[in-house]
Every structure is written in structure tokens, then in C-alpha cells.
Amino acid sequence: MIDQIIEFLSKEGWLNTHLESVNDFLWGWHSLVFVLVVCGIYFTIRTKFVQFRMFPEMCKLLVEASPKGKEKRHVSSFQAFAVSVATRVGTGNLAGVAGAIAIGGPGAVFWMWLIALIGSATAFVESTLAQLFKRRSEDSFIGGPAYYILHGLHSRWMAALFAVLLILTFGLSYNSIQSNTIAGALQQTFDFDPIIIGLVLSALALVIVFGGIQRIAKFSSVIVPVMAIGYLILAIVVLSMNYEKIPDMFALIFKSAFGIGPAAGGLVGAAMSNGIKRGLFSNEAGEGSAPHAAATASVTHPVKQGLIQALGVFTDTLLVCSCTAFIIIISGLYNCGDQGIALTQNALESQIGSVGQIFVTIAILFFAFSSIIGNYYYGEANIMFLTRKRWVLEVFRVLSAGVMVMIGALASLDVVWSFGEVLMAILTLCNLVAIMLLGKYAFKLLADYRAQKKRGIKSPTFKKSLFPKLKNDIDAWD
Image (cartoon, rainbow, N blue to C red):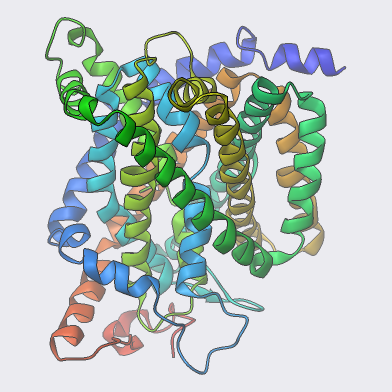
């Protein structure tokens, strides 16, 4: 039975062949890539380049304490940031970047950077909207695109569609991608049996997700910063060892991005497509995922979480993704035929010896596992949007943290990525339509926030009177 399942999920199987055809259509320049770029530029202009001019404010807000008088069980700004970064910093940073460079060449890195720079404005808008339309929950707040589509656009069918797509994408598909990468790394480094890996990962994930958002937030706020800082230090060490190659590395990235040079000319399209696609998978700007974490935070103004989540995009792509890219390009192994986590492992091993492969394995274990936990919570938020029946949530927990984690450990790399990319494309298009229509509220909130700061108010507060027509749609603000 297991052999039949593995064959169906293989690279040459029926499923992967059809998924690749759908992906080619969805990720062409005539569809999602074009829409992402246009939306990012539009939000950047309308917010007057908020991701650049308010960068110092983002850093300041990250360590701001929760409002006084709030319940102790409420999620802080930093915890919400950690949950969102937990899903961002994962397979996409170590395996996804490697795949983009292997297929599209070093130029893919430039397009990753570009989509992050303009996408951070998109992240600001969607997370600010999530805060505005969040709802009160048992021990914190809950929200996300399904909530702002329902209460902002008053479109129940579109909200339900997004919720279902999010559950399929994050709660199910993405968790298989994360466990697939963990299994591949552990198998290559320690020759562990994928079945055993899948069983252990499933058991650990189930223990955490059955603890609720509080346990998820605490787990993420500890694991993510430690591993991210450790990985950043390692990349700095590798760059320091090869400091004389750094100018050539940047020259190669930019030349490849624009097709300069005989080897780069035919890779421009591949660099653009794979850089933007893997960049989106990693930083999730516009995808509609991070708003779920943003909505849980207890803050005095919606813009605060919008700014913090915009910072999350920078943290993910400009720091962690760049670390992986630099290590691979410096090593010169990007065209050796390896892909995914194997390429990252081999590149680091070539620089610091066998300990490099072990470090990447440990890093991907924690990065990807924290993503499994964060992905699950995003799915839970949408399960609760669709129904409050407890048994439905319990079944989803078993499917998301148990079954899909197990399937991911057994499936081929190509199948899990192809399935995830199809769902990601449809989900992102749905969310982008919503935030384009609701963006006016985020722009007004930003203007209100800045006006209060100019008046000398250190911690701006939001009042429902700013939107009199929405008084019946805003639930969590007094």
C-alpha cells in the first residue's frame, strides 16, 4: 500500500505531470507574476514608500510592550511577528532559494529581492486590514483575509472561498512541503528512514498544535530568533572566508538578472519567474497568510502590526534568503545539478566541511518544523471562520499536523512543490483582489497614525469613529 502511494506521488506520476501544466499557466507573466508586481508598485506609491520611510518605526514597534490593562493571555506584537516569521522562515529560505538559483541562475536572487522590496508594502496593507477587521476570540484575537473580505467587502462566498483555499494551501499542502524537506535533509545527512521521520514529526507537531495559539506563539518566539541569528552568523563567516569573491558575486547576480553575458542571456525569463515564485513562497507578501498572525496581536493601532509584518518580509528575504543565496553562489556549485536542500547542504559543506551539512540539517529541522506549526494555525483560523464545531477542528488538527506531515515525508520533491505552487497562485490572486478593493482603509489608517505621531503622540491609538460607516463591522476595537 505504501509503495503504491509513493509511486503515485513520484516525479514521473500522473499527478505531477498535470500539476506542472497548471503551474506553467498560473505563473506566466500574463497572470500572477504580473499582478503581484503591479499590486506591489501600486501599494508602494499609495503608501508613499512606507516600507522605506518608516523602517525605523518598524524596529521600534517590534519591542513595544502590549497595551496596559490587556489580558495576560493576549499575544504580544513580538509573538505575532514570531509566528508569521516562523511560517516565512522555513523551506523557502533554504530549499526554495536553492531551487530558484539551480533553475534560474544567480539572477533569480535579484528578482527575489525586488519582490520583497515592493511586496513589503503589500504585506503592510493586508496586515493592517487584518487588525482593523479582527474579531474577539476566547483568549486572544482572530482574523485574516476571510474576515476582512466578509466584514469589509461583505462578500460571504468570496470569504468562504479564501478560507477553503487557505486551509488547503497552508494547513495541508505547505505542511507536506516542510516535512518533505526535513525528511530529505535528515536522510542525506544521517540516512534516517523517511517513514520514521514522518512519524516523529507528526507526533511532535500534534503535541504543540493541540496546545492552542498560546503554545504556538511561545514556541515560535523562542525557536525562530535563535535559529535565524545562528544562520546569519554562519553566512557572515562564509562571506568573511571569501571576502575577495564578494564583488564578483554581486556582479554575477545583477548580470544574470538582466541577461548580460553569454551564459545569462537565455536565463532571464527563468530567473524572473523562479525568483518571484520562490520569493513569494518564502516571504508570503500578498498571499494572505501573515495577516492571520497580525490579527492576533494586542496593539493600540492597526498600523503597528502592518509595519511589523512589513518588517517580517525584510527579515525573511533580505536576510535569511540572502544568506542561502550567498553561500550557494560563493561555493560555485549552483550549476552542478543539485536542487533543493541538497544543494544548500553541499554548498555549505564545501566551505566549512562536514559540519556545514550537519548545521543545515539542524537549521532546516527547526525552520521547517516551526513553519509546520505556524501553517497549522493559519488553517485553524479559517476552520474557525467556517464553523465553530469542535470536532471539525480536531479532525483538521490530525490531518494538518499528522497525516499531511507524514505524506510529505514520503512524497517526491517535485510533487509537493508543484501542488503547493498551484494552490499558492489561486490563493494569492483571491487575496490581492480583496486588498486592492479594501486598500483605501489601510491608507487612511496610515495617514491617521502619522498625523498622531506628528502631534507628539508616542503611541497612537485607533478609534472606531475614524470609519463611521464601518461601526457595525469593526468588532475588536472600543
